[in-house]
Length: 438
Image 1 (cartoon, rainbow, N blue to C red):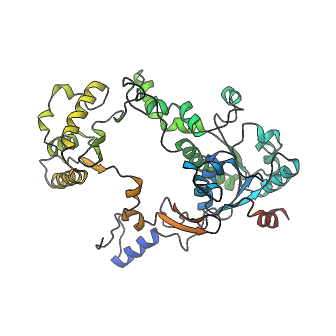
Image 2 (image 1 turned 180 degrees about the vertical axis):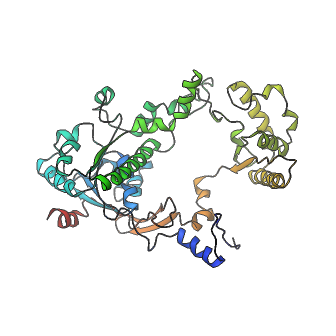
């Protein structure tokens, strides 16, 4: 693109000042790190949610020390299709952003004593062991808070650290898929239950969404706890249950079911409360269509030449898809039109209509949204990511070249950053001992 980049905010000043502001927004260089005085002790084990949590702290400047047994965290072996670099899987490399790696065998009393000394100097401890395990070893929140009252202690497990369910599930390792199953999320993903098997089965989310949301919520809770500790000197425990975290993502169907006293079934490619709002085939692929408001819906009918259906009684259900057979019928009607066009043709038709609609008081402001469904291989080619510095290539001796998504949010004054990506087992033993245990 040759045209000038624009800043779509109410930012005054000259063009030069705006360009400087834009460049600054996309770069973390020369800006302070919010957690540069925070030491995080990450003792997560066989659970990526803890690694994800500590990655967030690392990106905001904390000194994160990942504690592993001498043979390494089992999470190192989790990787798609067995692809690894020097024995380390891709997901673990992804979460190796800006961390230190130290080996301690917490099954041994001597190593637990060293862990306790480190925890005495830390601001945050993260662990994902079975509930009560760290406490049984003498290094749980109960013991560590006595020697470090300001400590923020994060524990992530399937059902949390207290209650009947937590006790029943103590010996069951926390995994993303079990969190999905327990939370009710999987029951809401997949095709309509009336479809033939296996198409009517519940589905898991295609990524480790449970581990990701647990890690993010844990980091959020800990950041707030650090703020509280800075004001009071008192630390606290942050208890995160992956089932709870995942359930927060499906709270909408739960709330509807409670309010309407009607369970929300799986509805496949449709949406719980809006229509049209989903995916449709085109001549060369698939598009996402969102026509939520009445005038958006009418605009969509116009550009697809389906206006004759505008007042059809069969589809006058306020476009809330409770009547699944009618939704399915109307889906096919829309698709009979979308398959006549390429994805780009549909996008252009929607844009042109929206431009005219914005200029005409008679069109009612209808804005039917059409977006091409991209594959990852084509998505990363979008110049948008380059403009926002969304990806960065690292070249480390132990893993070679790797491209990672970085700077996941843009902040004008205190943004995140990735300083290195390296994760050899025990690579920082000497550094940690010299700095914190000498």
